Image (cartoon, rainbow, N blue to C red; front, side):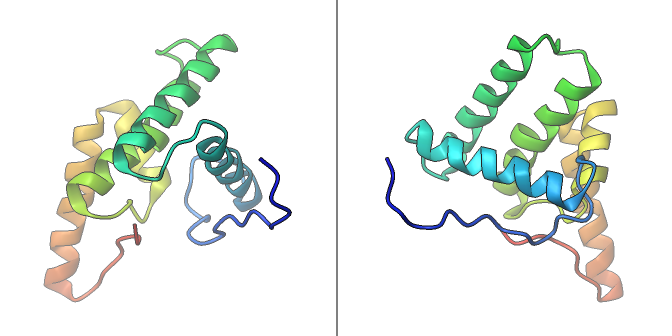
Length: 132
């Protein structure tokens, strides 16, 4: 549905992602957010999970198998970060590290790593969590 309004996408926290550049990350965000509109989905955690599954199905239809590096990274970037937000209340600050840990180990391990880093940051007085 065309409204004539600009479709804005956040440019914040684009430095440490799985994509090749901040611009590539913003392009992914644009496609992802526009897909919410296209499929009639909200930004609730349940709809984020549904859209993540749709993205992964699209990737698989292009020939990327679930054991491929690309599939595992997108899985971590979409479903994994949504689960992190549900569990911890925010997305990981270092999205690249989160996705790499999730791809090599598990999403649970990546969430535990973020939680552990935050506990250490509270002790030292630093904070790095990303806003939801």
